[in-house]
Length: 568
Image (cartoon, rainbow, N blue to C red; front, side, top):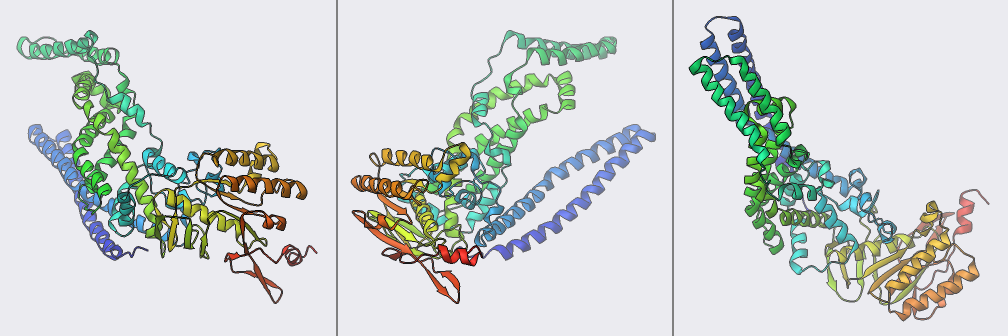
């Protein structure tokens, strides 16, 4: 677990910056009042030239002051974000991760049963617990890591462990938190398609330019030949309407405000990353790429800023009427459009960083963790990170296991614990255990088959669908199969017969599997090991130690639970 050493110092910095920004705000109000005062003097009193100069200079001074002091407000906002990140990690440590907004439910593939069976996505899920991903690419990278075994080099896991042991990670996470919610869904392809090609100029584009040149000539003639100034409004109107008609282009249709916010946050994040040193190849690649791309990001940011300004209706009317601003926008667009081509891979690389930081949270917020090692599946003191005060277990799996035990004794939670540990091993992240060995194993589950009742499918048929998928996959891949209360949707005789055939299939394909059951007949199946959970009774009370033990269960508690509920 990462020790928070810098939090108290952070509070001091926030307090100091609050005092500075309060003073800045007071001075800002005084300067604004000064501008208003000279404006009133200009409007009411004589000596228009003097008051006009005073008004203009005070207004310029006010704008410059705001530009120079804005950075202090931005620094304060960032420090508050860092403070929020510390709070979020405390939520995670206290088991209050369900306060995090992003559950990843929109990423669920319902045909991949493990995603909901193991609570990888959705409310109170592993994704909700881990994710600091704020961009589309980050969320997709984490989704893939949690669902598909990854082939990553040692440096990748080294980088995750390094992030788990550094408070610098919280600074980066704070920068990520500055992405707005729509960064998760913004269409990057639309941005690429809009900005990757230059606009081809057409003869029609010359009409507003000719109108503008005509206006300039007429202004000169007004002063030289004393022409009627009212005809100038004809040129102004022509400028506006020709700009709207002749310069119409898809680039003006994009929601530049949203994309500006996105790129502005990438810009701040890149500046942060370019200053942080990590002794790791993967993280240093991200750092060096951030240094390289800052200018390209800045160029795209300035273009989007111009397009955002254009979306202001009043500004659009005034500046297109006087300066054919759309024509200027297209010229600037063609100059800066090449920047976007260089940024595609960079945005994906930032998504990789988001995924790495998310996976590092197992190390940041838990008492102990481990890195996975290659070998036969063997775990020491694995625990479920989503279960508060979870009882840990050690377990080795080299073939098939029949897991028996009383109701509520911990069978299903144990299978989910093992499934989560293998998921994080496959992701090449950190694992909630003292040690964990395994190989990349595709995980297939049948833990919540009855959930398909809402789709009009009976429990038994839902189980058959899952068994069909498992049967196909075990022939092709190295698998870990987890089945809870096998074939519970049918009668005891058929259930036992069908279950024995499934066990034979799994054994024939040398799969690793755990099957929980209340049918003790399955304990005598060929080539399986028996494990169990049990309970104790003291003073008419039932208690569980949630520790897995060799052999089959010798106790039952259904009648006792019915008595406790005053049903019998």
